[in-house]
Image (cartoon, rainbow, N blue to C red; front, side, top):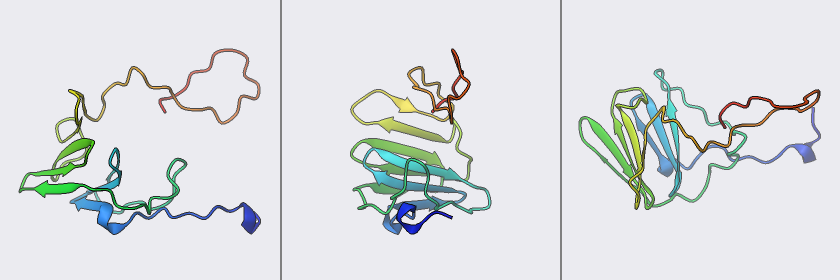
Length: 134
């Protein structure tokens, strides 16, 4: 067990005003440029801290939510997200368009500029190692 002074204080649960739930999908608007996407058919969502997000309890950014029977749209200063309700997060049900550009991201898009992930250790490594996407 770590001494208390080594245990970081965390605030991983986002402000409820930044959270949008639609069927088995939960979206959390973290900043004007960052949104968290979660899919779980049983609607059991995870509020634990992750390696890159310890403090989700941030000020709620400005955003709007519009929806009809079929589609949910979340819009911030930087992007427009469109989700087809009742679907998994797939190319045909989800898109995020970056405002001011002609770029639209969809699940499974190949990122040719991905900087890759990390290795837990370089012990015993001498030469090239394959890294998974980051």
